[in-house]
Image 1 (cartoon, one colour):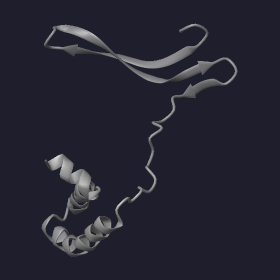
Image 2 (cartoon, one colour; image 1 turned 90 degrees about the vertical axis):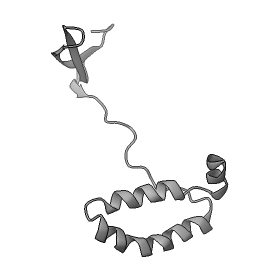
Image 3 (cartoon, rainbow, N blue to C red; image 1 turned 120 degrees about the vertical axis):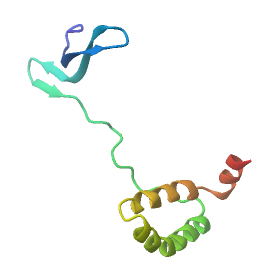
Length: 105
C-alpha cells in the first residue's frame, strides 16, 4: 500500500547461485480499489502500429517489385522462416535513400 492506493503483486522467490542467496521476484498485477475492486494492469500501450508513412515512393515501389521475384525463392529455400526474412529485408531497405547512405558512410 502506498498512500491511499493498494497495489497487487504476485511474489515468489528464486535462489541465485552466484550470490548464494534467495531473491524476491515480484510481478505487478494491478490495483485494488474500494469501490471498483480489483483493476488489472493496463496492457502495453504500444499495440500493433498503424500503416507507415512512405516518404520516398520510388524506393518503396522498387523494393515491392523486387520482393515479388524473391518471395518464391525464399519460400522454397526457407520454408519455415521466409516471412521473417521478408520483414528484415523491408526494415533494412525501406528507408529513404539518403538516410541509408549516411548510415553506411
